[in-house]
Length: 187
Image 1 (tube, rainbow, N blue to C red):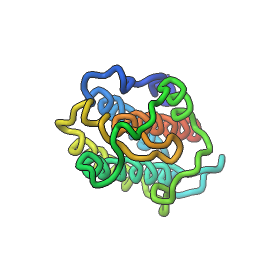
Image 2: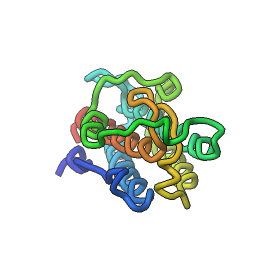
Image 3: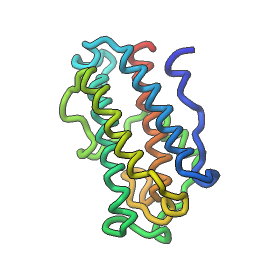
């Protein structure tokens, strides 16, 4: 089985889970596969421009770090009401179509705040990605499904969504990057 085929074709649906840890576990499994992919890519794949165009492995890693780290840092402030919106202001999502859209590589325009500005080495990529996951785990710890549904903030493509939905979207988003990396590097 190729590394690309190891990515799930579905992840736990936010409206069907009992504990947010179920969704977090799915994200951690996706991240583990991405780390396997990164370890399999030659060092030059992190610093050289990709022959197929798009971001190289180091730029992908930096983007995934910035996305996860930024989201993880938003959780406490959103839940405390310092930023974001209440549930009544958030969109209800169609998860099946969203998963298909978010988990396949595409040409979405990223906000500058999560776009790569450097070219990370393999060593830095494998060192930094676990740090972002650790911050997410810390800010997720002890949270309930209801709590993560009660508040949210706007997503650049999907509009105002709950923190639980953000977690679902970003897990699917990471699958897209993992699939893209596996294809690009023949893994």
